[in-house]
Amino acid sequence: MSYEEVAIIGGGSWATALAKIVSGNVKRLHWYIYEKEIIEYLKKHRHNPQYISSIEFDTKKIEFYNDVKSAMESAPIIIFVVPSAYIKNLMGTLDIDFTGRFFVSAVKGIVPDDNVTVTEYFQEQFSLTYSQVGVISGPCHAEEIAMGRLSYLTVAAEEEEQGERVASLLKSPFIKTILSSDIYGIEFGAVLKNIYALGAGINHGLGYGDNFQAVYISNAIREMERFLARLFERERHLFHSVYLGDLLVTAYSQFSRNRTFGNMIGKGYSVRSAMMELNMVAEGYYASKCIYEINQKYNVRIPIAETVYRILYENANAAEEVKELAKKLK
Image (cartoon, rainbow, N blue to C red; front, side):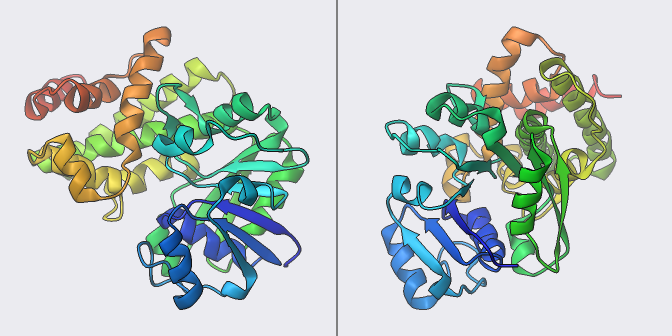
């Protein structure tokens, strides 16, 4: 059913996949992309030359923007898909009117230095209410969306009506949606799973096999449970797809940039070299430092996240760190 206008902010692989899904369910899609050359290419060739280039768009239904303020004020629903490391540079000096608008984060990351989730940042920066923000998350790689493979997404919002509204925008023969109200739990769960997936990549790069990885992941979900329970005490089931499912796919999939990044580190790459070769943002790298700093206040037992932090930020020897971690796993 096509009945509304939606803005998508971001031009990467996940933004491109979401733009394809949403564009089939709206009268008009307002799409902000930072690179002017990508906008011009999309207008002419109908696909993104850098990300998920197999997806073809009906550009007659799309209005492109290179000005983020204009794009965000163009529609009542805003789906934000900008890597967390770039959010403050993009949004920090802007004055945007969010009156009557609903903001949805599809970012699986945390804002560096501020150590807040994306919805928390927008609430603080732009005086949004909690009922004005939502989240899209779940085990859903952009590459599989492009192939039309069956995928599941969770939409979190305080009010069920708003959640259903966003879910209707994701309607597709190969997308199934689940509703939740655990906004912060889902956001922090996505942040943590990126760290654990990066660690799984390190393990693989060091030569650890499936048997060890299975134990590692089962410990990681328990670590996530402890952390979320300490920060946001409420009833939640971490075996649901938005938590455990997203952790599994990010830790094991060939499409996972966090696993790929970690694999390079395990094989001996420096952080800088791995970043340059990956040429995409591995959210787990930034998340690792943020979670480590947040946990200085809460003091939750998170040995896996702390191991990844030491390897990435303290130049600790990966082989020795994982060997010590293995002694703590059950």
